[in-house]
Image (cartoon, rainbow, N blue to C red; front, side, top):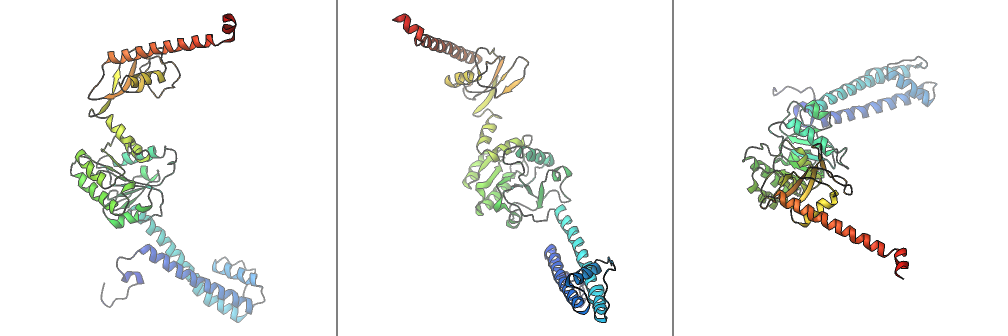
Length: 391
């Protein structure tokens, strides 16, 4: 800009200003001036013309709207002069400027939303920091779908804090009501812009699930959240298990491995802290793992099977396989099970063989039969007919 050149608008002379705020401020100023002109015109018409206050107001509004019904018109010199100066020259010009600023503000807002620079007013929302290196759109779609299927989370807002999507979110994410802010999780201003302090949950994803150095960035973000006393809301992804202790020292709420194909694990960690540990164990052989046992199931209900396996320290029954090879999870507990296999969560260090499981079920089946027999005999002994016979 030349030194002696006067800018067209005051805001052009200022650097790094919130343009949206300036436009709103200018619109407010112009609107106040317009109200003053309209009020002055109404009072002049009311005093100079033989019209009531309402008729003066009606004529003023039809004039500024350029409708001109013709039912009322100024007849005096003062009334006509004020209409020319205040209405045609002043008020209509101001109204045009206000409409122009409003359109400009709408374009400005749309551009800021598209590029992730619009600051939303949010509360009790989910903030997701970083974007998966591969398949980010699919991950966010599945995460949003799963989290909103949980009771109490049906309409929870989701905000992404990421440097991805500079040209706008994909339509698939926008249709789900997901919004984003262009920034980094270690930037205090960006965390403030996404209202991290009033968020219900904060999720920190690994920037690259296959890069061990990704934990450094995650730790930096977690440390920033800890400084803001927000780590108790955070669930973070940790690529290297040896770094978990560092995140725990920061007071992070949950720590899980990056599992891009199953965002449901992250959802479970967010809504039910601790469940991610159970789910992670199912994917490895370090502590526990699910195992299939092919054996005939009969004469026992699901409650009996679960109890039998636990009493014999075998493991926890997760599901059974029916005659059609369908895996039945969480079946009714009091209905007799007819199947040909079991899925059991067992200890990886001491995995029981199939004969141990068969023996446990057979022993429990014998126990149940004996118990039922005792109950039946007790019922017969306590019946009135039995008492009379004894006497």
